[in-house]
Length: 451
Image 1 (cartoon, rainbow, N blue to C red):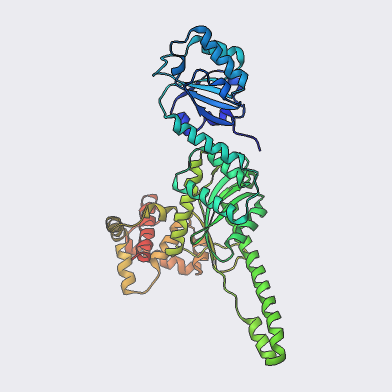
Image 2: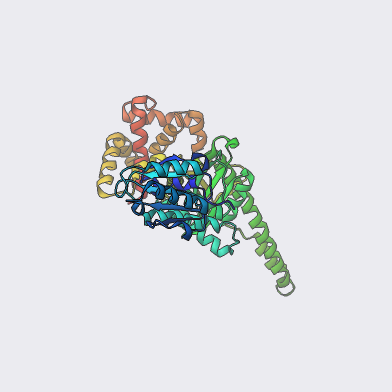
C-alpha cells in the first residue's frame, strides 16, 4: 500500500489553515512521508531517520550565520527528510535566503507557513492518517471491519471526519476504492435482507459498496459507475430488482426448510401438516432510502451530506404515507419500498430538522389558505380530492399518469378535477397556482402523519 505523500499532507484541512506556500521542491512533492515531527533544535538532523516532514518556527536558526543555515539544510537533505515547513512571523519574519537557496540545490521541498496553527494539531492529524494508511492492507476480522466501517460512516454523517486524506485512507483500509469518475450515494435501510439486497445491487451495477450495521438497520456508501447515467435512478432500480431476487431466494429457502422439517412430521402426523406448512405465507418488509449523488472525488463533506439526507429520507418514508403508490420494478415484493431524497424533496424541505409548534402553525396556515374549500368538502362528503390533486400535480398534470397511479378511469379523474377546480375557483394546472397547491397538499399529508 502506498504511503501518504507530501502533496497529500499539504492538502489537509488543518495545514490549509496555516496558509502553506511551497517555495521550492515542487517536483518532489510526491515523496512519501513516514512521520510528521516538530523541533526547534539546530542539530536535529542526526536524530531523524528519513521520510519525515519537519515542522519548525526556525527558533534554532535565529542568530546562526549563513554557513550554519546551509549546514542545517544539508544535514536534513542527507538524512532523507521528505520536506521542511517553516512557520514565519515569530522567530523568522521571512525565509532566510540561505535556507531557500540550499534547499533548491539539494532538491528539498521547503514550505512557508504564513499563518499560525499549533504544530501539535498538524502532527496529530497527519500522523493519525499515516498510521491509518499503513494499516490499510491488514486483514481485519469481520466484526472489526464492521466496527471500523460504522465509525467511518458515522464520522462522515456527523461531519466529524478529520480530513479528506484521512477519510480516503480509512476507506481504502476497508477496501472501498471508488474511481474518481464514479457517482457516490449515501444509503440507509431497515428491514429484512437489507445487507444482502445491497450486496446484490452493487454487484449488478458493478459498483463499490461500503456498508455497516447501525442501530435500526444498515448505512452505506454506494459508488456507481458513470456509465449508468442517472446514478440515483440506476441505483433505485438495481436495489428494487435485487430485493425481488433476495425475497425469492428467502422464500425458496424457507419453503425447503419447511418441507424438510415437515417430512419428519409426516410419518407421525399425516400429510395434512405438511401441506399447511408449505402453504404458509412468508412476509417481507424492507425500506431503503438513497441520498443525492455526488462525484466520488468530491470533498468528504459531500459524502456525509448524502448519508445524512438518506437517513432523513428513510425517517420520512417510515412515518409519512406516500402521496401515491410506490412505483415498483417487476418482481419487486410488495413489502419493499425504495425511495430517494429526490423523491421526497418537498417533505424534507417542509420538515427541516423536525416539526416544531411554530412550523406546524405555519404549515397549517398554508393548508387552510390553499386547500380550505377542499377540506371542508371532504369533511362533509367522503372523497379523495386532496390526494387526487397532489398526485396530479406531482405528475406534471398528466391525466394518463394520474389515472394509472390512482387506479381510476380517465372519466372519473376528469370529474374529480372538475370538482377540485370548482371548489378552489381556479385551474390547478396554471403555473401561478401549481407551486402553492403542491406545497399545501404535501404539508397536509405531513401534518396528518405527525400529530
